Each structure stands twice: as structure tokens, then as C-alpha cells.
Image 1 (cartoon, rainbow, N blue to C red):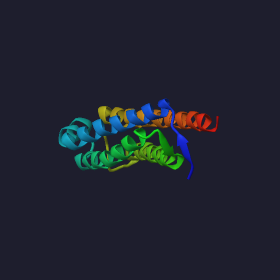
Image 2 (image 1 turned 135 degrees about the vertical axis):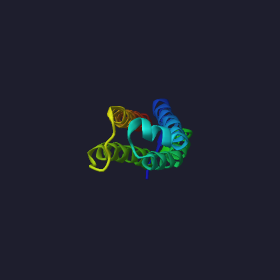
Image 3 (image 1 turned 45 degrees about the vertical axis):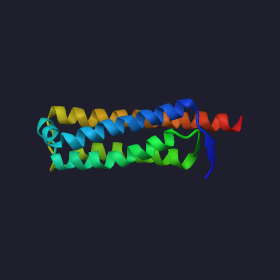
Length: 134
């Protein structure tokens, strides 16, 4: 796997990804019951999503702190984010889950945010690859 000299842009986007994962993870773990009621989403689903986010945030935070990183690590982050987006929309398609309007907005909003972060990570990866070959 190739090492790249990560751009400041990529490190900042990765840091924003990590910070948002920590914030949402803590929110979902700490307030899963309240949010479940507010959003008409299963509190167990929200809690488990929060638990999944926290180690992912640690990994992304670690990667963001490196000036030289493996290209595959960034691709893994982008891929995991893409899976998160797909699974978020899949949750809305399940017959067994019927979120209210706030729940739909929450799921769609966070999925779109993650998709945007992934695009920015891809752009940062491209900028880093260009800088590494120059």
C-alpha cells in the first residue's frame, strides 16, 4: 500500500469527520431513549449506531493526525462512510421502522452530511496524491 503525504485539507476533513462521529456517537449513546421517542426510531438502533461510531471516530482521528498516511486507510474511511450512507437510506425503506418527519429529516440529514464528508475526503486524497508526486 502506498504512503502519501496528506494535504492539510485532507487532514482537516478527516478531523471534521472524526469530530462529527464523536459528537453524534456520544449523542446517540447518551440520549438514545429520548431521541428514539422524538424521532420515532428504535432506541436500540440509535444506541448501537452510536457505539459503532465511537471506535470509527478514534480510527479517523488517528489517521487525521498523521502527515504521512496509507492511501488505503483513507479509502477504507471513504468506503465505510459510503456503507453508512447506504444503510441510513436502507433503514428508511424497512417496513418495520416508521420514523416520523423529524426521524426522516434526521436520518437523511446525517446521511447527506456523511456523503459530503466522503466527497471532501476523496478530493483531499486526490490533492494529497498530486502533492506526493510533485
